[in-house]
Amino acid sequence: MKIIYTIFLLFNISFAMAQFGEAQTITTQADGVRWIDAADIDGDGFNDIIAANRFGSNVTWYKNVDAGNSFVSNEIAFLNQTSMVTHGDLDGDGDIDIVASTIPDQRIVWFENLDGQGNFSNQKIISSIALNAFFLLVEDIDADGDLDVMSGGDASRIEWFENTDGLGNFGNAILIDSVPNSRSLAMEDLDNDGDLDLVSTSSGAINVWWFENIDGLGNFATKQEVGGLGLTAKTTLLVDFDNDGFIDVLAAYSALDRIVWYKNIGGTGNFSEEINITLTSKTGGINTGDIDNDGDIDILVSTTISPNLKWYENLDALGDFSQEIIIEADFAGSKCLALDIDNDGDLDAVRSSQNDDTIVWYENQLILSTGEAQLNTIKVHPNPADTALYVTGRNMSEISAMRVTTLLGSTIWEVQEYKNTINTSSWSSGSYFLELRNGSGQKRVIQVVKK
Image (cartoon, rainbow, N blue to C red; front, side, top):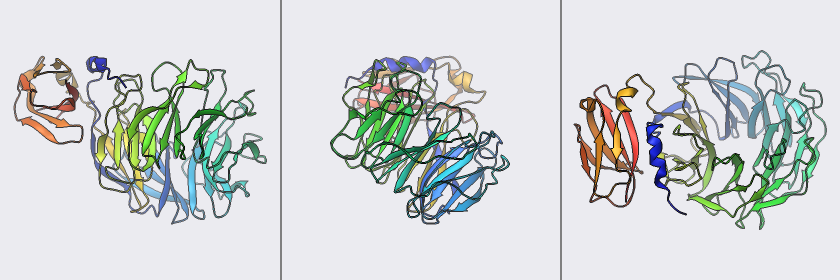
C-alpha cells in the first residue's frame, strides 16, 4: 500500500492529533459485562452507558451525571445471562427504549422508557423462540417510519421482526437467509437506491455477505459476496473510509488477527479485494469515528491481548491507516465505543472488560481552550523531514516545553524550552508525535514523519 504524505498539509486545519487521558471509572461492578452501548437515556444532553452484564444477568444503564465526572448505576431488569443490548425509540414517543437478548431463554425483549427519565417497564417480548440471538440491530427496515428489530447469531438464521404499529408491537420472525455464525450485522445503503441494505459476517469460505433490500420494504435478495479470508469474521461496520460518498465495509477477523476493509466501487455494491488495516491480536471490540477531527473516519479497537485499547488514524481520507496508537495496554478488553462523554465536541473512548467487571472512559484531549490560537500559529516544516525539523510561528516565547515520542509513547527527544530546530538525522524512518506546551499547560500534538 503506498504511503501518501499529503495528509500533513491538513495540520493547518486540524490542529492536534488526538491524545487520551488516564482511565476514568464509569463502574467496577458490571458483572461479566458482555456488551456496551450508549445513548442519552434521560434526555439531559449527556451520553449515558448501557450494559449487558452477562454474569450478573442484568441490563443496566449508567447515568452520566456531569459530563463524565461521575456515573450512577441503574439496573433496568434481570435478564438471564444477558447477551447483547442496543437501543432505539420503539414506541415513537421521543425517548430511548432498550432492546436486549438472552441466549439461554431464547428471548429478544424490549424495555419501554416510561417517562423519558430512564425509568423502564418490565420486559416486553419481541420473540420467545429466538435461538442463539447473539446480535441485535434496530433499524427502520421497511421504511414505514418506525424501528424494527433484526437478529443474527449461531443458529444460521438472520431474521427480522416488524414493528407493526409503531408502538412496539412486533410480528413474527421474517427469515432473510441462512448464514452460519452471523454474529455481526449492519445496515446502510450500499447500492445508492435509497433504502437500507444488509451486511452480515459468516463462517465458511466467504466471511462477509451483503443482501440488497430490493424494494425498500424489507424484502432482501440472495446474499452476495463482499469477501472472505476463510475463517469467521467477528465484526462488520459500514462507513465511508475514502470519502467518495459510498459506504465501504470493515471486517475484523479475530482468529486471523486482522482488520481489513473492502472498498465499495462506484457505489454499486461491488467490492474490492480486502485492504489490510492492521494485524492486531484477538479483537474484542471495534468502533469508528473521526477521532482526530480531521474530516475522515478513524478506527478504535479493543483486544484481549496487550496492548488492549488503541486507535488507527485514517492518514489521508483515502483509507490508508497509521500504525496502532495505544490508549491503554493493561486490561483484557471486551467492547469499545467512540463517543463524546464530556460534551466538549470530540470523540472520547469507552471500553469494557468482562474479566474485571469494569467500564471506563478516556478523555480525548484535543485543544479546545482559548489559548488554542497562540499554539495554532505554529508551523512545523519540512514534513516529512530528512535531517532537521524547523518549528516556527508567532508567539514562540509562549512555548515552555517540547517533546518527541514514538507512536507507542516512548520519548526520544525532550527539552524544557523553545527550540527552533530539531535534529532528526539519527531518527529511524517512520511517524512520530511532536508535543508542544505553553506556560499554561495547554498543548498541541503534531504528527511528523522522518523520511
